[in-house]
Image (cartoon, rainbow, N blue to C red):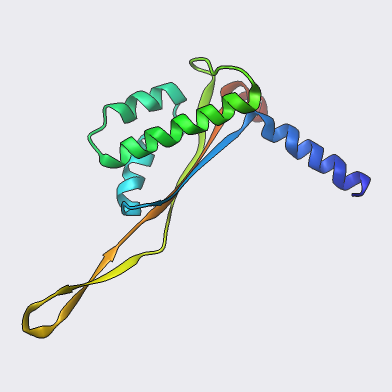
Length: 137
């Protein structure tokens, strides 16, 4: 590996040190329903977002809460210390479509109606708040 390539790789690794990622794939919920819940917590402080998800009535909130806990655990493992309240926030949270399951349902007069069972992929990135403030300044 060349010197410049190695230096840029080290710089990239140093920037990613404070960031943790978690993915949830093939969730059997429509992306639209998951995005409704994702919009509630996007950009929030992590422990506040966990409170919002805990008391939400949506089924997708339970899955997102578990994913957020996983992202926090990844951050703690990466930094070798416990996350404190007010330290982490949700930097990025997005929901993508997954492949659809297509089924047929019997319909009148010998016809068949197509049922599309949608699924989604969720990606969440957690970052430290003080790291975000130094980037803005």
